Image (cartoon, rainbow, N blue to C red; front, side, top):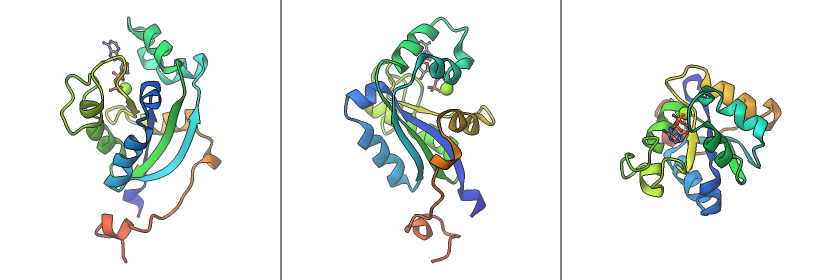
Length: 159
Ligand code: DAT
Ligand code: MG
């Protein structure tokens, strides 16, 4: 099942938590057939925010970004499945919710670039998923399990 086990890092951002959208986000990913491998309801501190968004350090919006992501609790998650990183990005939609297609998470649930509901690892940045998972989770916090419906999601998983 090696090609179904790609893992990606996903986070319901503070706006999603405050707006009661954790369940909706999980529902969409779960319904797609992706498998939850880890989850942590947590408060991001300044140091972790800087590490997580290191690539944006020099951008003019960096301080605002760190302020937002540390402004309240988040739901940090690891989701697993075929092509998980890119598929989650497709489900998220464009970075700016005003540009995101209806039907995507940001396109359905957000209206503001600075409060865009969800984070997912960048599929165009090789290794970003593993790097972010490692930053937020210890190996023993991730669960390796078989979902009962996997044979009904993946044609090549035997019943
Ligand atoms: P994404 O979250 O889609 O991977 P990103 O990595 O380019 O987007 O940026 C990280 C976050 O920073 C993004 O979710 C929202 C915020 N952001 C990006 N560009 C911005 C801008 N021009 N002004 C304000 N915030 C911005
Ligand atoms: Mg990004």
